[in-house]
Amino acid sequence: MEWIKDGNLDFLKKRKVEAREDAQKSVAEIMNRVKSGGDEALKAFTKQFDGIALEAIQVTEDQMTAAAARVPKPVLQAIKQAARNIRAFHEKQIPQSWTETVDQGVVLGQKVTPLDSVGVYVPGGTACYPSSVLMGAIPALVAGVKRVVLVSPPQKNGLIADGVLAAAHEIGIHEIYQVGGAQAIAALAYGTESIRSVNKIVGPGNLYVMLAKKYVFGDVAIDSLAGPSEIAVVADDSANPSWVAADLLSQAEHDRLSMPVLVTDSEPFGRQVEQEVEKQLKELPREAIASESANKQGKIILTANLQQAADVINQIAPEHLELATREPKEVLKFVRNAGAIFLGKYSSEPVGDYFAGPNHIIPTNGSARYASPLGVESFIKRSSIIEYSDEALQANGQAIAAFARFEGLEGHARAVEKRMKGAVIHE
Image (cartoon, rainbow, N blue to C red; front, top):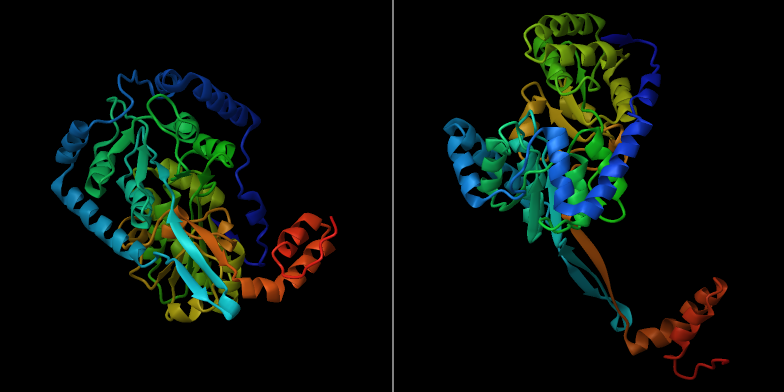
């Protein structure tokens, strides 16, 4: 891991992953082929990229039930409890419609409406992420979305991973398609013979999925353009260096481009963590990936005090932030930019990834400066309500017309004046 002692955070300018021109061109070709070729294009791309000859695109109820039965009972119980925790947390986020009557009989308000349909992308192929099912779909269900669709690439046996189907079965998702990659994003955005288009697409994926979401943005809504995973740990010498190292590696094992960062006011503690990282790397099954992440992207940033540490965090705006200090809530007061914040020595980042309840689909690449985690509000839209009485229009119409004419919009002014008693309109 690289040490930074001079406050120079230039590495932040380099963390954005720039897509190669050939990848962008490839995604555009995939999108256009799915638009024109529908299901046949989906099957062809699944054969090309996943090595699977699909007989059917949609997963059946029997396949879902059988998959859930194959999941070990302790894992199934964990999925059930995590689902309850996630639902309970997100139910607290439900926004309300409202109206109020103000002066002169004016009624103003807001109507909250869930989206009609949402597509949840769950990565797969060589991996199994039931947690992505829960995090992507449960907030949509809580928001009241009637049609929640799940897409995920098949594994080598030609089926979506058992854990993914078990999680979907547990929360009541019944419309599932075994396609992945950019082609799945195209199907969700534009529709095929088997897959009806949706209003919004959410969920993490690889570079091609991210580029596909960027391509369809505007035709449909998306949650974000997710980059590699990030974790920043603010720790003083009261923290356990072994635990901190383990937390840094929990994100380093995701991807070679993942960024694990330690921010500390104690150089001796930082050295201990550095030694622990090297020691624990050898014990990880994904050692090669985690080693490259730690060695090329990993940072240990030395600050004069924890106030300065919080300033550094606000510049990094990390996806995950752990505050492993004597008084984590004191440091929290100064934190403005972070996706998910974990307080205290027992709040390891994976607690949030899987189980606690808050969403693990959170802003990356510094976008926590302006973005929020996926939540119920991600799946609703707000309509403004405006009702003017005759009295209110007579009292305010002249001002409205003057405003409109100042902007050069005579038609706006006349639309109001035609309703005003005694108004003289020059035709």
